[in-house]
Image 1: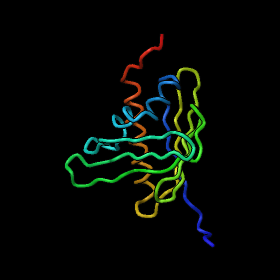
Image 2: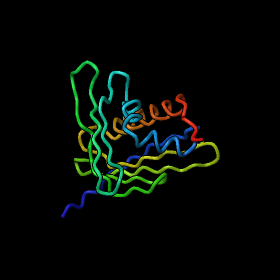
Image 3: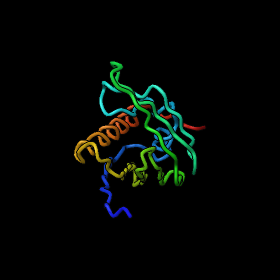
Length: 147
């Protein structure tokens, strides 16, 4: 029996945008490839996303110089439209993403289980950097109004 307690890391950001826009930018592949990187020397050239319980996702993350690459992939355990996404990464770790709109801002909070290779601080900083890129992308791109 595994009695090791898993360390959970939380990152969050408050975004000046409506929940509809944030949900779409978070879940649609054409947007994911624009913001899913922790630094400018990485990018996500391809994203696939089947956003439903049991659906799979795969984001290809690559160093721009070609020195490293990996697939960030997993399966959705729960999807509550514009509220909550829970998924399991391919390595077995769990991630929960909450979306909470308050007034003109929407808070996105990610809680994820730490892996054992990198320090908790490094993991927190990396996930926070990606979330910060998401915030910047959402706040600096126009969202089409539906007539």
